[in-house]
Image (tube, rainbow, N blue to C red):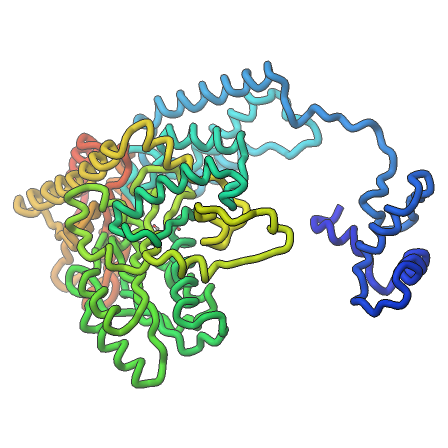
Length: 558
Ligand SMILES: Cc1ncc(COP(=O)(O)O)c(C=O)c1O
């Protein structure tokens, strides 16, 4: 059966059924209306025929209303009975609780690469016509085995990239939301659930300093999509729907996340119209270089319209000087979007908020609750100061949506690209209800303190003569360091030593770090990062990391 139902419903126009042609001509002979679609003519034809006269046509494309009589349909298989439901819930519950119990002891690195692929291969099962032998127990075994073939992203030792979360309460919220399966695209269809989501968004808007009445929030899959949606909004605000974006210019720093370059291309702006602004020695956007580039582009007849600043870069956790950038954007009439995917959530912690000065002066901000609020992957958030601009950029109308009347509450479908969507609001709301906002603030304070603790540990080692250098001290919860370069050491050799150092640390399986490259005089130097973001990472993990660093250094030539 074709995947597109229209393949069945609309046969090629060159081969119309003769009686359909006759019927169409007889019913509307003198009106010169647009030619009705064959499907509509077939609908009319069948509606006017007695049931017995509906012959099943030979050949392809039977009309969907004319189904051949088959065996009786088994109505029960996709709706398990109460006993089965309960048994499945019990099994899933035991599986999940066991997982939670063992997470802290699991090897920090997880199993990826060749070993991970081999493991993944062993836990495959064919998609059969019948239910799997062994039922839920067997399915859970396959899931557990497949899950072992992965980075241990939910574990306390995961200090790589930007760690995610996985709060238990959010998992429970997903279960409830998915089983209830309410349509939350339009407020009218589920005012209760959309209200809960809106309550969380209103709270977040206030926390981020967007407390004016027209501000709006939107939950997305993550910040890649939130950055994209922000750019769509900025572009629409400055250029409307004209479609000529050949002169539209976007500015971000050399340290920006790659999702920004991707978003620029996806919104139809030439990739070369994204300007890379220089950074200072702390990897923060250089506002003077930004100003110069904007001025030069205006002289060339180009149309600067958007600056994207970072509230915490992925590489080093650098926070761009948002207040100064906002001031420039106001003068130049530019949209300021802040990519706070990693660092934005630190506004929830008092000492984080003070490091994010100027964030509330942006036109839009994105941040990832699946990072800084410890939620499962697939939870991003976009906040827009003037929500009417978000709505204007994402307006969509359709005849079949006419029953969705106006609501006093904003509808997610009118503020972003999605229509049908998972009910993401509950996975924020339930943890906030069950833990309270303070638990999040405290956890974020702890992450800032742990990055500091790690840095002090590095400082002590450097003071004791270890051949290390700190490349980026924590502006939030990331610290970047590497082995010092030897006199006249070739860049490749130096890089290889740093890769080896990180592998030795990771090989001990208590902490898992990732690396990046940062510019040095003759190229790009491999630099090791520690990003503390998991709600499961506590002091003992940082102590373990520093011990493992000592052991790794012991096997390193200086
Ligand atoms: C600064 C920054 N921006 C954007 C993104 C993309 O976010 P997501 O993975 O949620 O799409 C990331 C991801 O780590 C990030 O660190």
